[in-house]
Image 1 (cartoon, helix red, strand yellow):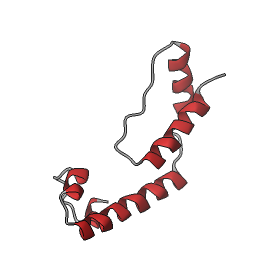
Image 2: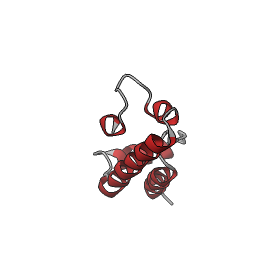
Image 3: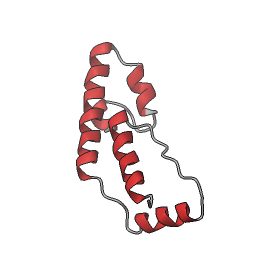
Image 4: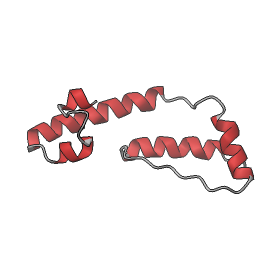
Length: 87
């Protein structure tokens, strides 16, 4: 993603994109959107994630999603966590 956006790995991606001229920023944001869409299509839970989430919930340990991803990716991750929560 960094390479395709033209940002060195040593820089913060979103900060660097925000500082780009409008045309470069649009191209970089399009790359980020494309790559996040691919992530949503191919995302899989890690082994034992369901068991861990149920254990945390059963012990009333709060869970949170911390992400810098787009709203679409956040919604996808939120749906995963809702699926893991027992009725």
